[in-house]
Image (cartoon, rainbow, N blue to C red; front, side, top):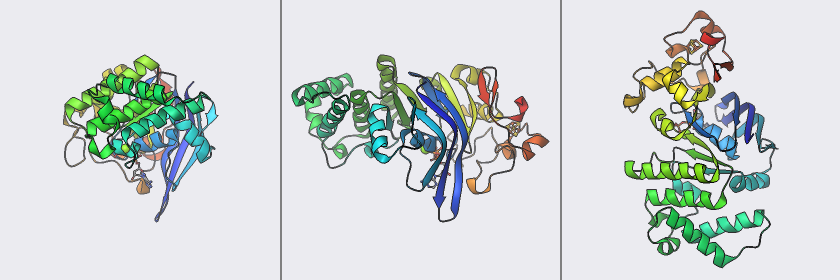
Length: 321
Ligand SMILES: Nc1ncnc2c1ncn2[C@@H]1O[C@H](COP(=O)(O)OP(=O)(O)OP(=O)(O)O)[C@@H](O)[C@H]1O
Ligand code: SF4
Ligand SMILES: [Mg+2]
């Protein structure tokens, strides 16, 4: 097992107090799995990604168990987390500039990735060989003139080019798990398709497992074999993407699927799900989706369902318990 999370819970402290954002999430990911995480804005998708990558902000508190390759991430000190990132886990952000240092050239940063990788493997770093490797990777990522790109600073490149440089970094580091948090939402449609195919290539050629975070269930369908649906910091459904799309068990998943063509409606409401996601400060009692659910029952308003196994999937809904 590559990743094992049990009762993973995250709190954020702000001036108005401490709020529980992720609630008792259970998640296992095997080596090489392609996992999509979907849910409306604020459902806790990025928080889960940051927790797995050990990139929590200082105001966060993580509870529960989270293991990557058998190593406990929750108890790790910053130095160990740095070790984890790059070797075990690598995260790609919506804004790729967040992954790069603005005052270092692209070439310096890519060579640094090779140096760090060799150091961790206790191998001797050879600059000449490293330059060759970096150029090969850039060619593979369809940069027509890699040598010229190496001398550029991140701000001198387009958004699509910067995202491909970040993918080059992942290719050089070859982590076991890649977390991509809305990696294409800031890019043009044509570049989006290119970036998606590169991410899939990382999985197919090197067996790198992927957590692909998106609010777009149609895109998750293209990228993932397994889908996790989140709502109000909870895992609502988890199972094979094709089965979930064909036959969603959770009413929230069903709502997300039936909104696919209209998901970008401006007022933030999904057309087939009435209302908007709740505030974490005033979460409803019982099932957190109950105020919006067309199938709500009395028990839903009183007690929160827990994750249970149904037809080889995980679901958090009283219709199945
Ligand atoms: N550092 C932080 N401090 C306090 N609250 C935070 C912090 N980061 C996120 N939150 C809150 O946690 C909740 C979940 O946020 P998160 O960014 O994980 O959601 P998301 O599903 O990734 O949303 P989006 O689709 O908009 O990116 C939101 O209510 C958000 O305001
Ligand atoms: S538990 Fe009840 S309210 Fe919640 S999703 Fe299931 S049926 Fe709807
Ligand atoms: Mg997010």
